[in-house]
Image (cartoon, rainbow, N blue to C red; front, side):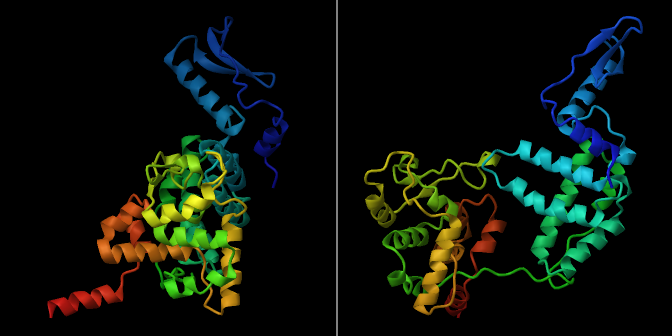
Length: 356
């Protein structure tokens, strides 16, 4: 369904997004106005608070929507989703993956409800869409993630006056799914990889890959952080990645490097400038493929690099506790660390044995 807003949006593609119309005084009427596509939009009495507020509102709409005024009743879910994606791409820094995460949710939203007016989306329609995602094989975690992203789109729609506030408010009444209480698959549990399965692949990977694996095992950093490491980011035995998962939130990431990790990194720093990659030639995907092939060659159960981070978290938690695991993993809350640091049966057994 092609709406008036879509036609106007694509017709104005040539307009620069920062082409904000000037506020003009219309002497015959005594009002302020803007000129937009050959027509006058009056703001109110010249210099009045009403004119100030209307001008700010129209400028915001132009910057966010490409139009000064959009009739709410004609805004479709597809239009809302498309404009929300533009907003996310402009709101997050270039290195953030958040906009990509929203794209899948918005595609699913458009697929299910795209042609409907956004103002007509009810909790029942939203719940039916969510349940359909679950029946198609999505996990509880994935369904709830898309649920939250859809709510965020409608919340943004309220702030730019594309969606009535009562629609967003009503959608919040739809509960998130709970594990084993819906058609959605239970979340996949990522188990820590045992050291014997890691060590078994050593003869089947290149020397650089094995160094990467050992450093990964000793530090528990994310694969992306390991592969993005440069000599200039290592100072006083601490690796401070410039780009990381939560950099856009203003979080500072510091990864301490112990003596063995520094010893392993040393040979890979030779001849490199401060901005060169310590471990060039690999992405997270190719690193994972190298491990996968080596597992097959070594005849051990398949594991992937992210399981090394889980193994590290579990070891730290067993020896030093949850607070220590949270600190070294760089998590802001212990709840997130709980996901990584599996509770050890061995530790529990030791406690009850000590207690008699």
